[in-house]
Amino acid sequence: MSDFFDPGSNSNMTDPGGHKANHDVNAQKYHTQGVPGFWSEVTNLLIAVAIIAVIFLLIWIF
Image (tube, rainbow, N blue to C red; front, side, top):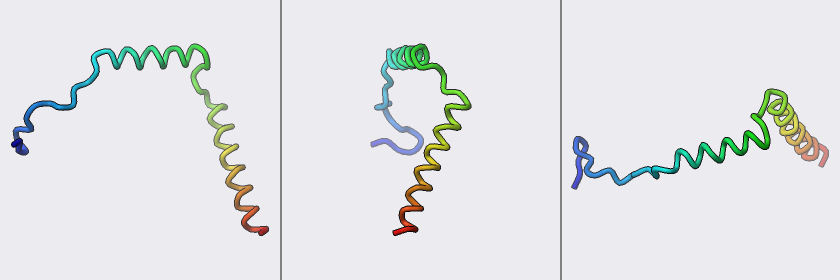
């Protein structure tokens, strides 16, 4: 049984190729889509605010 000072064997082993695979996936995504820019984030935020506003207006009307 492990205690606080001796946690025992490390059961949370990482995948040795996982970091490279994640990097490759992100590189491919950035190559095809581009890095999300400021205006993209702003338009996404405005769309979300507009949807929430429409929901509140529908609740207020009905």
